[in-house]
Amino acid sequence: MQSLQERFTTFYGTLGQESLGRIGQLYHDAVTFRDPVAAHEGLAALESYFRRLLSGGSDCRFVIHEQDFGSASAWVRWTMTFCHPRLNRGRLVAVSGVSLLRFTDDRITEQEDFYDLGAMLYEQLPVIGPVVRFLRRRLAA
Image (cartoon, rainbow, N blue to C red; front, side, top):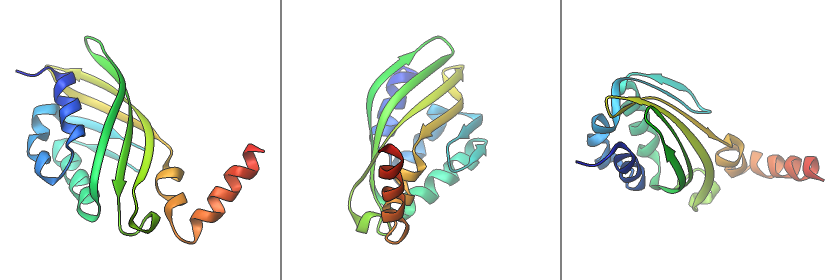
C-alpha cells in the first residue's frame, strides 16, 4: 500500500477527471480545503470543486519540488501547469505554490494552498493582464 506522501504525489501528478475517482483514498470525508479562490468543506464539495476546475481546461499537472511529511502535517512546494481556452490565449500557464496539509488516519483532513492568484488568473486575461503586469513591474522598480 502506498504511503500518504506517495498517494499525494501520484494524485496531483496525474490530476484529471479520471483521477478524481481516487480522491477518497487521499482525503478524509470531513476534509477542509482552502485556496485563494474559495474554501470547501467535505469530500463531496472538494470533488465537485475539482470537477468544475478541470472541466473547462486541459492538461493540468503538478510537479512536486520539495516536500516534508511529518506524523500529522506536511508542506509541499509545487508548480502547477495548465491550459484553459480563456486564459493566456489557450497557451500553457505555470503557477508556483505551497500546500500545507494536516492528516489523520492516513488521509488529509485539512489542506491550505498558497499561490499567486494574479499570476494564475488576472495576468492571463486579455484586457486585464497587461494592466496587472504593468502594475507589478511598476511596483518592483
